[in-house]
Length: 265
Image 1 (cartoon, helix red, strand yellow):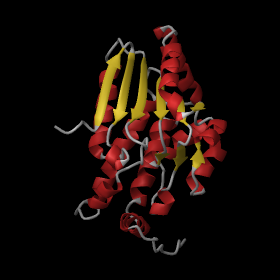
Image 2 (spheres, helix red, strand yellow):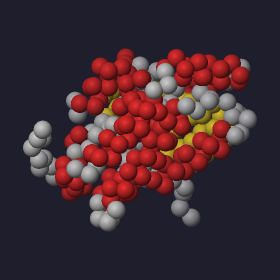
Image 3 (tube, helix red, strand yellow):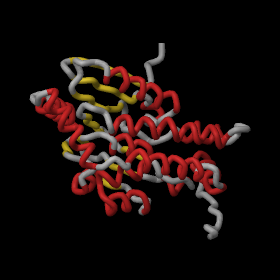
Image 4 (tube, rainbow, N blue to C red):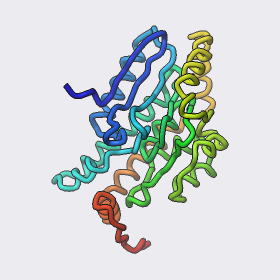
C-alpha cells in the first residue's frame, strides 16, 4: 500500500502535519490541498492540541503547485474554470492556516518555492535548516504569485516581498531571517532537536493565553487579508489563462527556454 501524500500525527499537545510527496518535491495538487484543509479542520476541533507543526518529507519542503497537474488542465474544455478552482482551494487553505487559532510552526528542512512560500508565510513561526531557501519563480513560468503576495508582505514587508516577487533570485534562509520571514536557522543535523525545544517552550504557555495572544496578533495585523486574497485569486486565475502562462509551463516541462510574447499595454 502506498504511503499517504499527507500525514497528521497528534501527540503530547502537538499536531504535526506533513507533506509527503517527496518524489514530486511535495508539489501541491488539489487533492493534497484538500487533505491539508481537512486536517486543519479536524485539529481545530481537538481540544488536546495546543501547537501545529507544518513539516515535509524529502529534501524539498514544497515546490509549489504541481505544474504537471496545472498543464494537464490546459487540455480541458473548461480549463479556465479548473484553474480558478485550483486557485480558490489554495487561497482558502492559506487563509485557514493564517487564521488558525493555535500557534503554528513551519519547519523547513529544505527549499520552499512558489505556493509553498504562501504556506510558510501563513504560519506564525518558521524554523529552517541551513541550506534552505525561498524562491518565487512564477514570472519565469509566465504566471504570478498573486495569492502569496499579501501574506508575504505581512511577514517581510514591501522590500522583502519585492525581492522574492520580482528578482527571480533565491533568498537564503539566513537572509529571510533578517527580513522576518524566518525566525531561526540551524544546522540540518540540529533541526529535530530545535523543533523539540521550540515545541517545549511554546507548550509552557497557558492554552487560553496563547489563543488570546494569537487573536491579538491577527487583530493588530488588520482585517483586510480576506479582501486582498479574493482580489489576488482573481489576478492569479486570469494570469494562468494568458499565452505566456501556457508557454511558460510548457517550456518548464519541456526543459527549454520560454519564448515570451511582447508585454503590450
